[in-house]
Image (cartoon, rainbow, N blue to C red; front, side):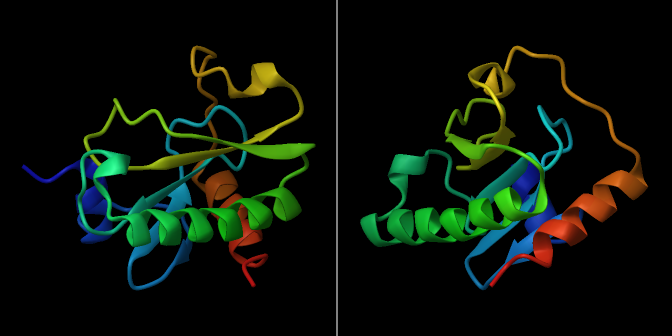
Length: 131
């Protein structure tokens, strides 16, 4: 069965896209810890990050770096943290979380709620920072 992320890649489920190329996709997390919380995924469904080939892993991290820099430039924060947890969805993904303190990236924190307009504006701000 296709993961929710595979359905997003296929366009079956909408997302707030911030960056995309032929192999990777970055979009806002629907259940964010902070404004600008972004997910980066390989388009090819792979359950576990370390099942990616060494080259695909390196390329995913390079793409993630580019997106994290854009998030940092678009969303007020001290820095961006990245996390690979991968238990919620059986599709490799990297969380980029804008933070001002270590507590900002605690996944036990309540998730924030934003309006469609707020998500759209945040995605646009990040996308505009992609070089």
